[in-house]
Amino acid sequence: MKTRYKVLIVLVLVLGILIAAGVVALAILSIDEPPPDVADLEVHRVDVAEDENGYSYLREAGKVLWWPGYESGAAYADAGFPEEPERQKDPVETEKSDRLEKIAAGKDWDDALVDEVLAHNAETFALIEKALACPHFQVPPVLSIFTRVPEIFDWLSLMNLQAVSARNLFKRGREKQAFDEALSIVRMGHSIQGAKGCLIHYSVGQTVKLRGLEVMRQMLPATVLDAEQLKACAKSLVSHDANEDGLTDAFRVEYAVTVNVLEDLKTGRMDIETLKGMGIEEPPSKPPRFSLERLAFFWHFRLNRTKRLCADRFRTLIANGCTNYARIERLERPADLPRPLHPLIPSNSAGKMVFLLLVPSLDSIPAHKCEENVDVAATRVLIALKAFKVVKGRLPETLGELVPEYLDAVPLDDFDGKPLRYNPEKKVIYSVGKDLKDDGGMTKEEQKAWWSKEHPSWDYEMDGEPDVWQMPDPSFPIEF
Image (cartoon, rainbow, N blue to C red; front, side, top):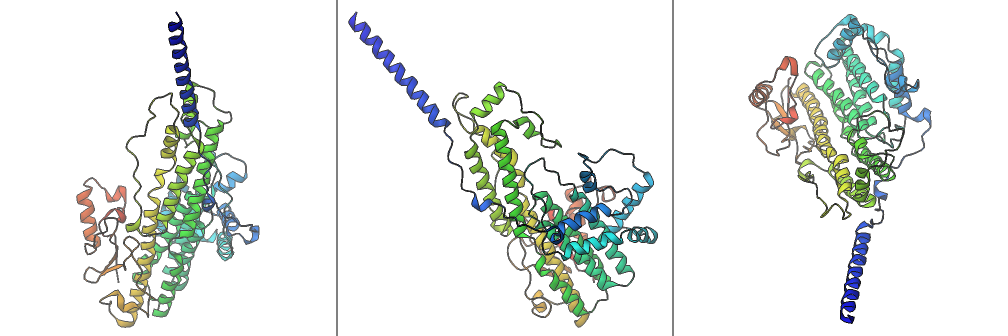
């Protein structure tokens, strides 16, 4: 009997020890790590008076812009509307707007329509000029995925207005003013990129800048500007490479927004289903109800571990945004999410799932920065080539002939970090592109033939011009 009791006592003790060990193990696994040090990811904003902030004037410019069928997103936001109200569109106004957009892109022309839109926008142009003259350009803080940024659509319309104006000036023989107007589009885009906004702001600024460069290149073949004017124009673009400081700030803003999402998930102000449907316009008005699914989420979510995952990824994105494409650290999306050993064993598998939802889609942004830098560099070289030809009556045999009279140095290809390529036989400036292989550049005809072969169903009338950055050796033709 005594032996039986002893065995029972030993079994109870062993079981108690095992249970205690299990509880301790679960407690240890449940412990989160300390908050990460993210001082390097903080956005350093400055106090800016409204009359010194170009954002204020550009926002007002969007509100007074006259454009057929146009309604200002900023004006609706100021009026308290959660979004632009549904309204019946006037077919005539829509047709005018579509045609003006084609004019802005250099694909159409209508003197009467251009005169009409320019005559109605004297105040708009004055506000744009004030915006670009300001010492600062800083948007309001973006703190949440639900923060509204309605002015960005207004800015795209302002871009089209300026493009129409530049093309009109060129057609009227006021070529110096036309190039200055195109440069103001580039400057506006550069300012928006550096506005300490989110990546949406940065991308819109990039779109604006690229339109200004496109207008310059399209005017270049027919221009009669003298060599000194062209050299000054090329020099003015030196300070308008991709705004890497702006991109760094945009990534920092995105990290702050990501952290706020994580905090909301932890406190229950948001649930994972809301996160998966981030297209919704407004944050949920009530906290999600308790459920076993939510309990399981909390069991497998460690806030600080997830913050560290996100912080490390954003640091890599920032580093990638400040280097050329060949040096970018490749960030692969895991094929399968790591799973806990058992649903009852706490882990950070939910945190890793949230991380994959929030961050990997940003991996392509640094590559777009490289494309933008090549766009600026190629435009500078084309303008310098035009100036050289005005003086010499011919194109140079190498880009080295442009230095130092027309360029301080041959601009670099931001894909491999080497000087931009030039093929005088094919008359193209080109980049090695994402495959980092120099295949000699491509003429327009070669580009079209390659694209048609790779995309047999492509319809140029319906689908428009193909993306040059998806081709081998993205090339810019010399059409003079």
